[in-house]
Length: 102
Image (cartoon, rainbow, N blue to C red; front, side, top):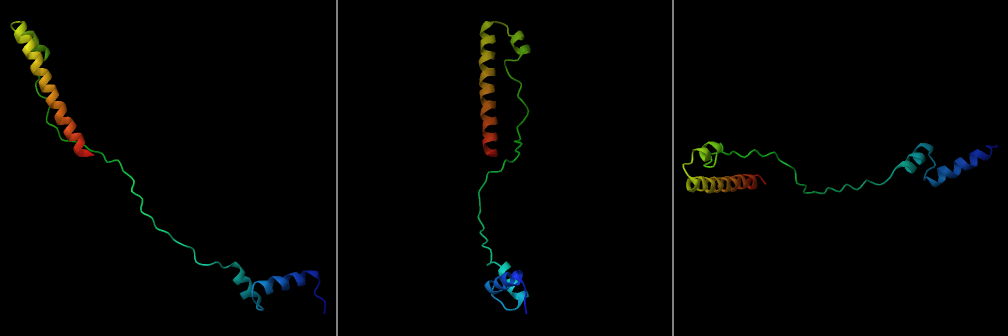
């Protein structure tokens, strides 16, 4: 009985895949071991929208109307200093509110 030159190659493939039964032999060649699954936890900072609750802007002592209404230079300078201190205090409040968001 002659099978031809391709039959010899097929027999070698079946033999190397581990089987005399062709279907099991070919299925054995295609299988691999179980894949390794690795789970990792990665800490990534996620931006969160923060809307700090601040009261309304105060009526600053150095507003245009207040400075125009100052009776003299001493009161005018005093109003400027009061307005500056009010703005510094407002900035402290804003900074504290934004720091609380982080």
